[in-house]
Image (cartoon, rainbow, N blue to C red; front, side, top):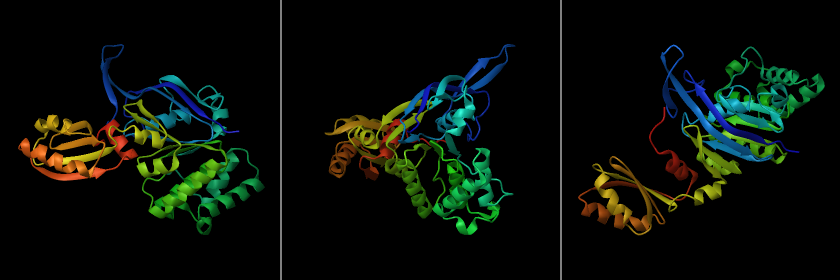
Length: 338
């Protein structure tokens, strides 16, 4: 029987930048007075986030840098203690029954944290030993996973000489050694070459078909679309969209996204563009305009005419069909987050 994951009203406030966070992008800052009147900064990483991951599904967590994805995974895997709220792995409260919860989960962090003084085989077997798996069984499982992840030829070599892709494959194999019911993958395909990424996707699908629950964070929209049964988009520590990839893509205003760029500021043109037939939304940022509409190319002549009437010059057009990337940009904007 599969195991689900639940989070209820999770809130996490840091008094210093959270682990793995690059700068402060995406987080909300609040200046507060301490008990002696000294001002300090609070960084809100999660702000009342609730999730319900069904047993046996692949669930994707998407969001810009600093949106709270890694903090969420940290709480669900007992590595980060929430300021408020609750989380469960199956029937176990993550923070009241940590040992029981840990036995049900496998975790792959954003960056490999392998012991460079060990070989690949030793890393897998030592991990299994931590979970009380006998010597004969852990030797067998390690050999199977090394073969499955195409690491058999390097199994008895120190991992310090492994490539980034090999380290990532070994990290995932290690997380699977004790056959967890729930597998957490934090940016699993970041930096991987196409061949390794496709191998990883096949392994994720295979593991899920065995009844396992998988929660992954990703910036790769193609990956989320290909693997996930449902997706949650998080920004500023809050849930802003939830559903299947098909449902989410269908929810984009107008469906098509036309990204326009003009030679100068386009603020005065926004009103004319909103009046065009089939246009449902117009977002202006300096000389750039994101226009959502029920059609793509056929709308271009009307856009050129509207721009000409407003004395603006269109210099670039990019048209894309309904996609998770369009949905992501619609909900989170396209300003860079460091």
